[in-house]
Image (cartoon, rainbow, N blue to C red; front, side, top):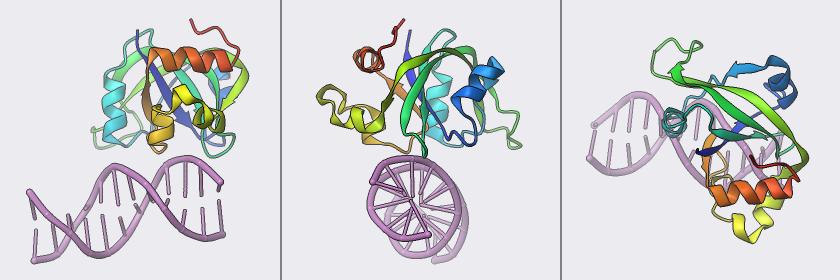
Length: 138
DNA sequence: GCCAACGTTGGC
DNA sequence: GCCAACGTTGGC
């Protein structure tokens, strides 16, 4: 199983909306690197749900429920998306500032390339962040 | 709201 | 295929 981090601006699509929806398309991604990561996702993979712009923190864990398929909001046919469902919220949200300060998390893409909206996360990083969030990593 | 960093576009 | 110009993202 692989781990990921997906970003959303909470005033556009928040964790609470994500939970309420059950399963939803992660659409609107218009970046090749991000698309390639989405293509690599497999059903059952886990992803951190990160609030960008406001909050700047990881607020929960989601799971891939449908692998890459055409993005219905895209006319060109170029872009794809995957479907996610919420698994559980973090007991304590983990902020970007905390991650930046943690010696073992310096290589996280969130630190090195904060603009990328879909990012891979390594298993050690996953465990550390879950520990910080006081949340079951499984 | 500003601006730095990054990605994309398009002229040559 | 290079690179300048432009647009967008996102942290602060």
